[in-house]
Image (tube, rainbow over all chains, first blue to last red):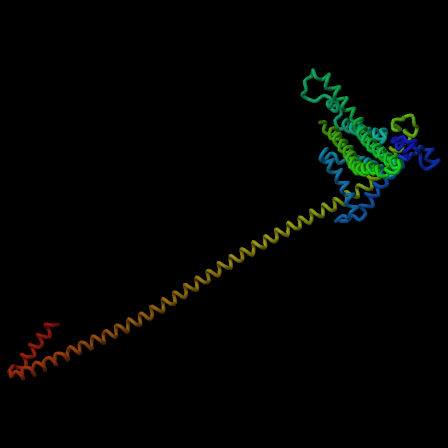
Length: 251
Length: 164
């Protein structure tokens, strides 16, 4: 699937295609969206079926659901404080959506929707719009004081204000590129080494023996990618929390 | 890189579907899934707090009972000590009274005995004069000395009286 005329094609895995036949084609429903649906269904299933026993002493699935809840709850409380409770459903949805997207992408034949910059940037823009709206709603005109810290010498204003504005506007960019780049890099590497396995395996007598090396690398890479999948979801969530802290408290 | 091919119409439709799916997920989680988790966690926290309170109450009750027991023990001990002390004092007083009564009786008997001894001595002393007189007369008779009886008696009396 990746070897076409002995060339390594690591990027075709990111190509969009419609699913569900003509209906999907008519509404532009891609395999990316299908994986979003699967991820969403899994998240809802985890939270609803996992919590169904409502046990005082939780079982495995309930523990998983509760620790996911507690993880984001504590993160918000630590970063934003008690005012952060309001944003809990949003941050939780964001974290789980990114985490399940990253994890789902590691399954064979699966599509990694977080490997598209358009998607990560859209999510980052959701965060950016949210923090800006929250900051303006809470602080009104004082929000613009964010770009010029109190006590700074006035003559520095021409330097500080543009720098602050640029750093504020670059938030969604850095947020989206970090996730996108990590996912793409991981999947490209997996695909490249997987292609090596196939290419070396076709070499002849020694080939299958040599192909063990890239295979071993790929096994290690998958473990590494699981870590990256979790870590990037965590980074996305915690940066959202930090931005929310700035929006709520203005420094 | 397919991700940067923004001319692809699927890019936009994908994002529209993303917003729909993400919004749906947010709605379901916010309104159904998460409140359920919160309810279970709150219930557990309340249960733990209640149990802790109950344990704390039980501990306080136990400590109170312990203190009560300690106080009762101390009271019983002091009562017992008082009873023992009073019994000892009573016994001592009784013993002292008995000893005194015995002493009195003994004194009386001693006094009686002494008076009897004195009477006996006096009577013995009276007899002694007669014995002395008789002995004197016998000795005078053996020495063949003639003396009037009255002088002899006076001389004996003088000798006996001189000695007390």
